Image (tube, rainbow, N blue to C red):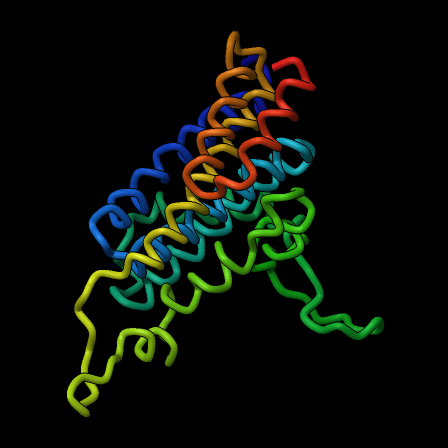
Length: 242
């Protein structure tokens, strides 16, 4: 692991693997909606891992944007706790670090070709998350199940409340029962994200035995979530010499 992208893929891949345990614990205890909320975060991490693995030229921007975020947090602290909430030397260092990267994150604040107004981008990439996901192959096709649907539960929406209501004896009430359907859907997708993270490790590093182990893991995923596709996957693995 001699290059920055190697180190990033290794450590961020570990982050995705750790992420998996969170929706897993929620799902096995019946908290389907809770698992979905955590799935969204895991999916975003998986997309960023795969995108930067394939576009290492954008890695520095990913790291540099932390300086923008730290400055934004600093001003939020000022707004709540006052200008004297942080030591002057910390404020000066944060401003200096921000100034060193500010220019690369300046974007137009309007869509007109003649627009001259600018602002600091809200993220490290010129691509929004959906556009980035669509550049990552099959994992990008999971946007609805792993991003848009969980978004309804992670953010305050009418749907968040409505999906927890039920009619009982002619009365509308709040359902406190477990959500096995949502739990299964979240865990299936989280399991898929974990396999993608392992596949990135396989592509980036020459780890002995990982190719075969990953092939077996994909078949295990199919046996659990899509039994009808098992034979096809086994045939494909045999054809590839796995």
